[in-house]
Amino acid sequence: MKSSALLEFAHDYVREFVEFAEEDRIFANDINKVAGIIKDFSFVDKLNAFANSKNIELNQGFAGFNE
Image 1: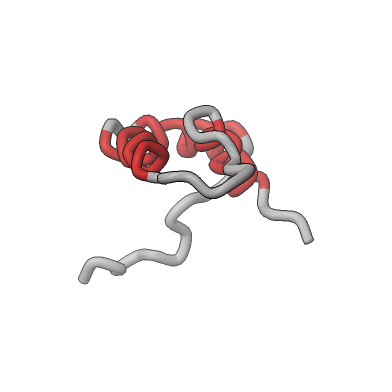
Image 2 (image 1 turned 45 degrees about the vertical axis):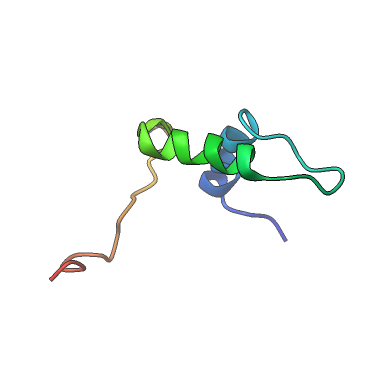
């Protein structure tokens, strides 16, 4: 089974910061790195740019979600 292009892009972007764990390790640094790209909005910005380049509509069907 293959993921969507957007999910694959998100995965690849995260992998730029956190390598695959070949063996058990403490994941605090990995978690902090991912938290950093979420906090500084680079994760959102990169995904939005990718989605726009592929004409992928994000937030479709979420009208009124926060009501």
